[in-house]
Length: 127
Image 1 (cartoon, rainbow, N blue to C red):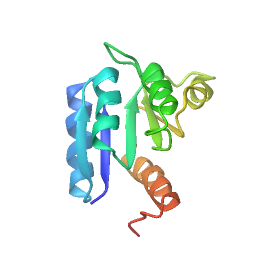
Image 2 (tube, rainbow, N blue to C red):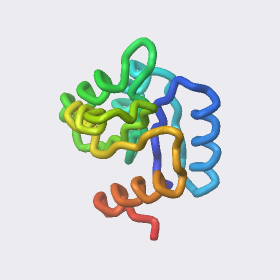
Image 3 (cartoon, helix red, strand yellow):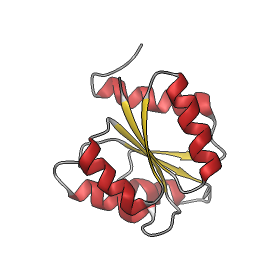
Image 4 (cartoon, one colour):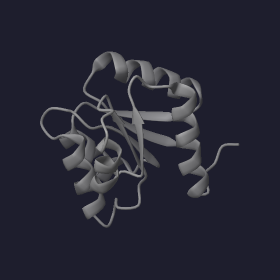
């Protein structure tokens, strides 16, 4: 079963996404802030990370940079989740180390396509 780490501080969004991803056969691990997210990537070795960019304790920008800086976790795909949809925000997320960007509100079919793209690249596609 493919393991996804969802790092999101908003409980409603975290619950919504976790339920829907689990229904589609993913194992979902949760973290509520960037610091816990970085720790969970190091300890849990997920196949993909969904990372909210605006969180307490450690924001997603910092968490993405730390994940990329660690050779043990540098190759884990990261999809940024953010309500920031201003010009330049996607580039900022990519510059921080994210592989892709998904603006909120989450469009589940599009997010699932993004997830599948990275799983196929890793040879773990579920098609």
